[in-house]
Image (cartoon, rainbow, N blue to C red; front, side):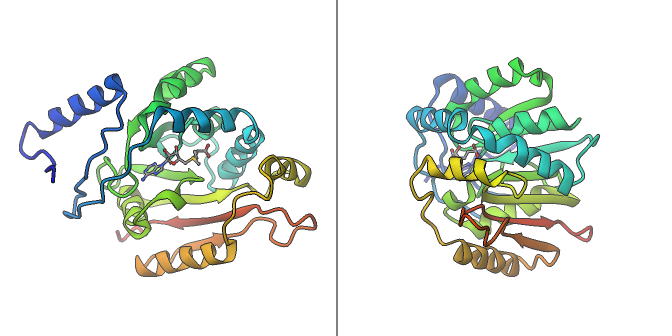
Length: 259
Ligand SMILES: C[S@@+](CC[C@H](N)C(=O)[O-])C[C@H]1O[C@@H](n2cnc3c(N)ncnc32)[C@H](O)[C@@H]1O
């Protein structure tokens, strides 16, 4: 098994490795060792084709989703006029990052396991005037490459169902959040997305994603319990709406100031 680099040169090694990963365009995500010594499972390779497929969805069927979601996040998490660091974990094309960038003064990081998204993302950010306020870093949610207490906000849409060890990943999110920082993680749509738009988004994909929303909500409760996170809420937007559209499920939690 590959060992994480140790010693004084390790930081430089990681930077060179990250740069090479982006230049060569390979997945390159081997096993990672988190701060407390846990070794995450080596993730499967994520390809350029995966990235292109998701980019197409984000520009097509899913395009109406990101603006309202960003608006809701700014309102719910009180981000208007706020500075600091935000991370979108599993951001992929980074559309949510760009929408958040437009609505806040924060620096936003696209942290995704698949680096093939990054050239597209950085170009889009530049085109939208966000170039100086975004970054991209290859990151596995299960072993995040950020120091403790780094980020003010961590968001994620449509990614957590792909994280093999969700307890490890949510533990990492809590570790990286600043005390008092907030995370908003989930899949689906925001409550402010009009029903007819949500129907069109879901309709473009037959029955929509096949997963049990109630079971996923229970899973999120169980993860919070196992991490002893008390300050949280599981959100099921527009549950039981008249059209029966699946708006998904989210969890919002805060890192307590005590650690
Ligand atoms: C369905 S896409 C959603 C992309 C984006 N959040 C959106 O809503 O447009 C899932 C994303 O999660 C990323 N991903 C999957 N496993 C991951 C992991 N372990 N750590 C970080 N990102 C991951 C994928 O590369 C992909 O970009």
